[in-house]
Image (cartoon, helix red, strand yellow):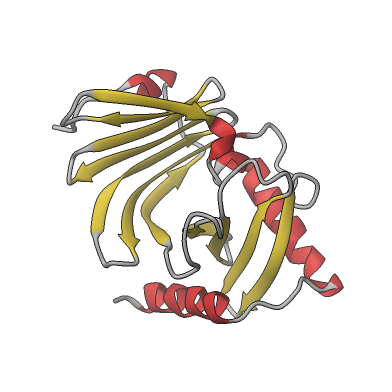
Length: 203
């Protein structure tokens, strides 16, 4: 585990075991995160997904704001998840089956909004500033999406490094979470819209 990944893990665990309400002096951090997210036009990176059972998946993450997002699972190469046209499409390569749900059923739907406002549309639960790491935990105010999300950023420059999804209380315990760590990222480049129509396995 690299030093950066170790720091991210420690921040995530500290969030998991004890959260403090957001304080007035943390509003600047929220505003900084909002500006960073709203300034993103495109973002692309490799990802590692780990669930609470230790199962590991690898893939590529694509974001083209607003409205377009894709998680392409390469290892195992079974699933593709695409957000477009206010829908989330889950495609199973093995079964060749497609499932469609509302975009707002995902706790990550805030990525796709024209203007990200963490305090108007979302409920900020906690902010933690750890030297070169910044983390925010939040959920949707209208509860249209399931569970809560922690975003973890490195600072100087601010870069999204990880998110952690927790289920709603009705769907599981707080220990039932999924971590997505981002690596080899780039942003501000051209991603053709056609990328969000592709379901084929990578070569």
